[in-house]
Length: 175
Image (cartoon, rainbow, N blue to C red; front, side, top):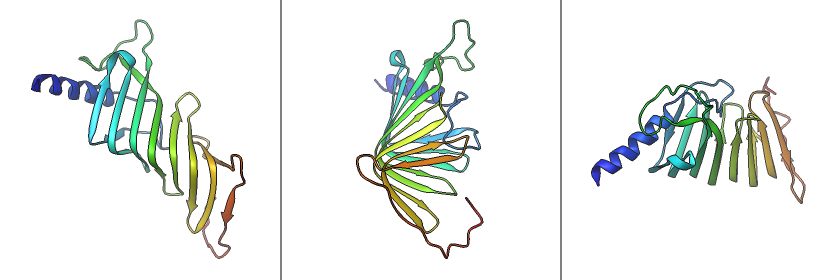
């Protein structure tokens, strides 16, 4: 039984230490993952991170109650850089975050009910009770889309309207 737990943990670690195309930061680089529990579902090419999930890459951070990592299938004949149980996983294709989702960069802080990252579009989408803060400016809506590489952010009101408070005294040289 203890050996099975060790093998599952090694499987998850092997999968998570592979280079990943996923980006939660425009800086790229290694992705560091922490959670209370990790489950590896090899046949489904998924890793579940459960409980106080904290993911960091470069200067960006994603926090949530749970995160599901879905890996792309490896191309036929593609070498695996890591052997062992998790070696069949490909690049991270999608991340799904649920419950108390926070996405934080030096330029902004966003919170919502749910979030997803689509590697093919390099886009983070957050939904439900969105609050977006940039310095002292605050915006609220229902759907937040962040195009990571393009550094473009869009807030949609859903069935309602977006609400904003802009502080004109803000002396930032930023966006």
